[in-house]
Image (cartoon, rainbow, N blue to C red):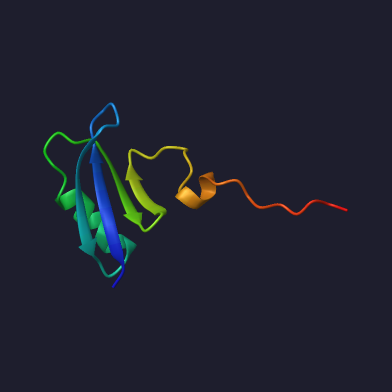
Length: 77
């Protein structure tokens, strides 16, 4: 079973708390994120390792830590 980390944030983006869980897949992790959401929390993210698999509200930022790293490019000769 895949391991997921759910992060809850306040309106300023500060981390309020996290939950870690083994889920059968992304869908179950999303459902769990909603079910475990602390009262009044409006922002949260569901991570599978370095991959962001779900967030509310959706943003246009990079969906994984890997996407933020510069790509290794070979010099053209």
